[in-house]
Image (cartoon, rainbow, N blue to C red; front, side, top):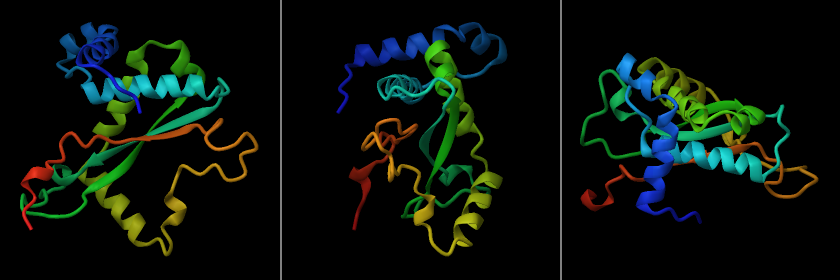
Length: 169
């Protein structure tokens, strides 16, 4: 478990946004969120800790709530899962050599690509799959180094917006 103080999270966020500060100001882009900045930091650190080959592709999956991205959006009273894993891709060497804003921009771009069309395409694809266990991305079967060593993939999810206190059965 990784424990970060509020100050540490703000430092990570500020460091990720520092490189792109002028871009955000001149293009009216919003700065990287805490979730994106911390996810990028973890992705970069884990890639280093797992000793990835610098030429190796690594994929960070973030779960995106698509309720409001559908047209029309799901009704507010909808009760059920409406999330999907979205891949952010990078080369391990680029994660290590480039500033934190690089990984953050890859994650932000992946999240922003989740549109109504993207979600509906994903749902059609999943509906047509006879067996969904093949859609799992985190296997290390056959990895001679052992569990997770060299595994280039990672899944990060945020439950910050999941309001469990309003659930009423």
